[in-house]
Image 1 (cartoon, rainbow, N blue to C red):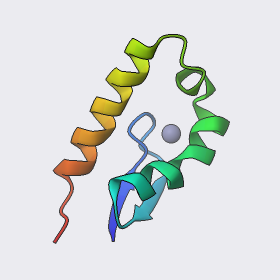
Image 2 (cartoon, rainbow, N blue to C red; image 1 turned 135 degrees about the vertical axis):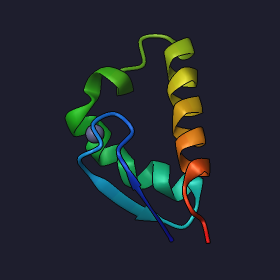
Image 3 (spheres, rainbow, N blue to C red; image 1 turned 90 degrees about the horizontal axis):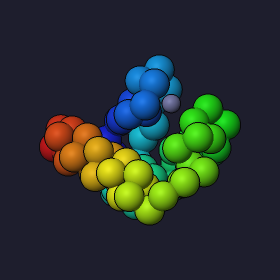
Image 4 (spheres, rainbow, N blue to C red; image 1 turned 180 degrees about the vertical axis):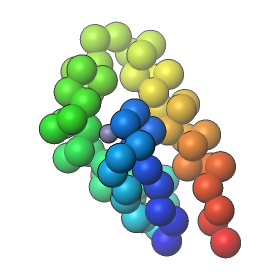
Length: 63
Ligand SMILES: [Zn+2]
């Protein structure tokens, strides 16, 4: 399990065992606190967010 803060506000923490699980764990928070991002006006911004999320997840200590 790794612990990760929301990459957009940093005030909420989530725990998950994989990137996919982390994504799922964060979804309710994103729909509540970051609707603008989830609205996904363009696939470009969604891809950019996914890239940020992936690098933040990979930067965590997975030991
Ligand atoms: Zn947040």
